[in-house]
Every structure is written in C-alpha cells, then in structure tokens.
Amino acid sequence: MLVGFDTNDDAGVYLLSPEMALVQTVDFFTPIVDDPHTFGQIAAANALSDVYAMGGKPVSALSIVGFPDKGDPEILEQIIRGGLSKMTEAQCSVIGGHSIRNDDIQFGYSVTGIINPNRVWRNVGARAGDVLLLTKAIGTGVLSTALKKDRATPVSLQAATVSMAELNRAASEALQEMQNKAGAATPVHAVTDVTGFGLLGHAREMALGDSQRSIEPVSLEIDYSTVRYLPGAREAAHQGFLPGGLKNNRDFIGDCVRFGEGVPQEYRDLLFDPQTSGGLLIAILPESAEAAISALDGHGVSARRIGKVIAKTNALLFVR
Image 1 (cartoon, rainbow, N blue to C red):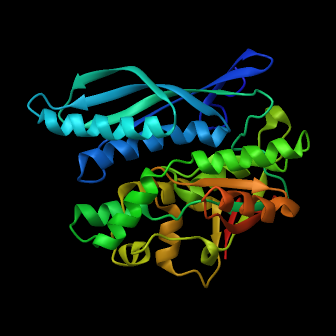
Image 2: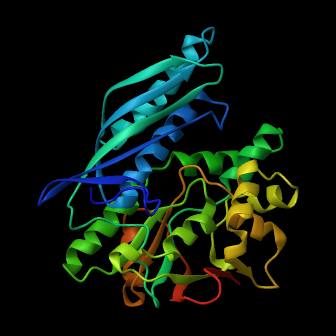
C-alpha cells in the first residue's frame, strides 16, 4: 500500500509493479439537482475526480445505486445514462455494480485507475514558497441549498451544474504533461480536489504534513478576492442559504483559520462551503506557476492563483 487513509488522501494507491499501481476510490450521494440525467453526470464526475487528483487514469468503475421500490424506472434509467455519458467521456469502462432498495435515491461509483507509482500526487507535500492554484469556482453548496428553497436563479443553477459535471481530467492531464517535461524535479508538490470539506477544509489537509514521510507542516495564506465564485453564490451566502455541511466544516476546522478583518462574512462562509465535484487545489513551485496556468489554459481550464504556502506559524490557514 503506497497511500492509505492516514493522511485523508483522495484515493488509495496499491503497488502492482515498479511501473504500475492501482488508484481506488468510491463516492455516492443523494440528488443535488432536479434533473436525473444531470444528477448522474455530476455523481460520475465527482467519483472520477479523486483519481484525477492523484494523477491517475480511470480505467474501470462499478455503479452503486439505491432506489425506492416504487420509484419511476424512467428516472433511474436517466440517472444511469447520465453517469455513463461521463464515464464514456473519461474513457472509463463501467463493468458492473450493485443496487439496493432504498427510501432515498443514491447514486455513485467505485472507480479504479492506474498510475505510475513514482508520479503519485498526495494531498500533503506543500512547501514554503509554493504558489496555490485552484481550477474551479466554488459555491455549489450554498447554491444547492438555495435550489432546495426554490431561490436559485436559472443563471446560478446553470453555472453550478456545468461546473459540477465538468471532469477534472483536462486539469490533471495538463499537470501531468508539465510534470513529465520537468522530469525528476517535479514542480508539483501537492494536489487535492475540493469537495465536501470545502476549500479551507482541504487546504487544512494540505498544510498538516506527514511525519511518517518527514513532510513538515506548513501554513497556507489565501487571498479570498482571487478565488472564483459561482454566479449567485455570494448572494446565496449573504441570504443565509448555508448547508449543514458548511456549518460542520466551520465547527471542525474553524480554530485552524485566521481571517483578516476586511474579509466579508459571506466570503468567510463560502470558503467553508462543501463542494460537489469541485476543482483541483495545487501547490506548485512559484517559478512554475505561470507555466502551469498557461498549460491548464491550453487544456481549457481556467486556473487562478489564490495564495501561497508559508512556514508554519500559529495557524494553519490565513485568509486575507
């Protein structure tokens, strides 16, 4: 086992040979949008994301389905078709699955990928001086909550849906190409995808270090004004459409965070907002940051520089 659960990494990695390892992950959840086909797409993109965040290539998947006994089969068919469309886009074969009767609809996948064991990205490894890049806008949690209250605008809903259904494949491939050109002196030090723990929760994981691998803890400094937010997200947060997961994240890691006095409350909330199928958070050498942004842009990914890594201080995370 090369990567387990000791550092809360995105997926497990198991060595097969000196040149190949397996990447394995599983994720499923209840619907967060009304359209079943779109829900299936989002569930698939979310499950695939962990493999991309490790630098792997998804190759096979098993579907996980919970569906009411008296549910409409047409809805289930559309969910499965939506998921399959994203798996096809990812060139990942769905080779089976399992379904159960359940009062609530649940859907997702167990995904297996392959990876070079010498090219595994971890969620730890960030070094002081590194630049932080983020590849997607945030705010899916508050917008999903607004949708449940019938208060999400069509523009906001469309933007959130497109973001959640977008694969992190292009971002991962762009970074891998850059890494391959760099050879042994890789400029990418840590990568994670931003999902349920929100931007700050996953940034905290990146800052913790790993004593077993002699990786020292660091602190991360984030400029809230450089983070991209989905259209309508700030308004949804300001109006109090805060999901339970946001409050849980704030309770869990709030003591690790120091906010500057000028950071508005709605942005503080959004940085704790749990994301579904969020983007990649990347710690990279500063001299390689612009090249990475250019490489990502060349693959159709709009990455932003959102902060930097500094030596460990009295807080893991600073937001200014």
